[in-house]
Each structure stands twice: as C-alpha cells, then as structure tokens.
Image (cartoon, rainbow, N blue to C red; front, top):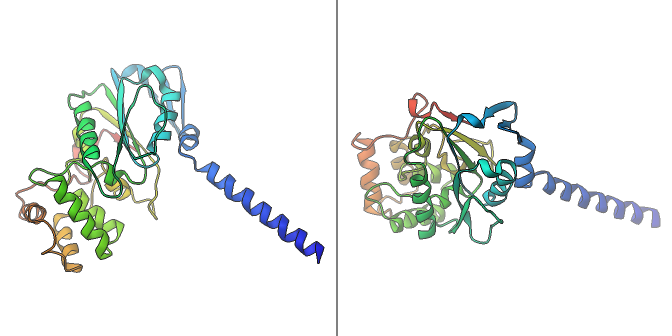
Length: 275
C-alpha cells in the first residue's frame, strides 16, 4: 500500500514538473529570444539575416496580451538600434520598457485607449520609406487591442457589433472576418500603411491551426475573406437588425464595390512583408 502511495506521489510530482516546464517553454520573452539574435549590425530571425546598417529607422509596434514581454525581449536584443515604438496591451499585462511606449487598453471589448494607441501606431510610420524597418509583435488579443474603425464607423458601433457577435455564438474566425472588414488596420491594412518600408511580423499564435489571417485579425497578412462573407455571417445568426446601421452600410458598400476589399495575395503593397 505504501509503495502504491509513493508511486502516485512521485507521478503527481513529475506531472507538476512537466506542467511548469511546459509553461516555461512558451514564455513570450523566452520564445522571442530563442528565435531572435543580434550580432553587431546583423539581426538573425531563425535562419534569416538582416543587416540593420541598411535601415535608416527601426520601428517596433505591436498588440496583444503577451506583447509586453515580447517587447522587453526585443529591447534586450536590439537596444539602441530601436528608433521608437508603440505597443497596445491588455490592462495590467505590462513590462518595464525604455524605448517602446506601452499603452494599456481594453480586451475583449475594445476601448478608447486601444483606439488612440492604434492611431498612434499608424502615425508612427506614416512617413516610412523604403530604407525603414518595422518590427511587428503580435500575440493573442491583438484584434481587440488594435481598434481603429473604418471611416463612418464609431468605436461604439464597433464595440456593440463585437458584443453582439460574442453573445450570439459566432466563432473567432467569423468575428475576425467582421473585424477585418470594419477596420483601418486589420486584414492586411497595417502592412499597406507601412509600405514601402520592410515589415517583419513576429507572431505568437493562440489560434488552433495557426491561421495567420485569423491571429489578431491578420493586420500584416493577405486576407482571403470578403465583405460578402460578413453579411452571410450576420444572416447566419439572424442579427442583421441588431448590428449598427453604420456597420451594415459599410459592409454593403464593400459588396457593391464602393469600398475597397481587404488586400489579397497578389497585392504588391504586401510584397515587402516578412513573417
């Protein structure tokens, strides 16, 4: 009997050790440092090398619940090479940073802090040129933390739409399809805004299957979804009459071709983006 108890105690102890080792392995800062390394002017990202001396400015931007420790790791690696930076993180998900500005914002429902931070991120590199480098740090929660509604849609309209989608049982893929088509940033539009600078995305996935266009609603990757799909989602859950009219009008304008679709694979503005 004592032998059995000892065996069970040992197995429990081993299970706890395995659990904590697993947590250690996926810590955001350690994940970044396993993948990124700097030697002088050379930045190594996995098996890729970038000569930082070829870039005039290096901007660090980002959003997500794990982005603060990611940014801290990047500051440790790049230090004085960073020109400036801004990240949006969930309230209380912070880290000590010296060169990158940290903005706390609402999640899962976006708030004004997130909107102001997203606008500041866009403005940070609005005059970026071909010899500039933008390092984009993305983790789970990035969708809610980068709320910059399309023209004609208010933050409240966006908040109400997300609340309705969350309450009706829509999937994360469906919610993010709506987010991408009601945003200035999501669905590849952030990469468009950074053009012609080179953009590199470092992504921590919280999405089953790791679909890059779903993680944080894919701000820096081509978007395969369409405005038509957005209306189909509203119809599927019978919520068209609940959705703010500004959102419905924007989606309809996209379906009719009066509002540009999100960038797709062939879009040349995404050709200077590296994942």
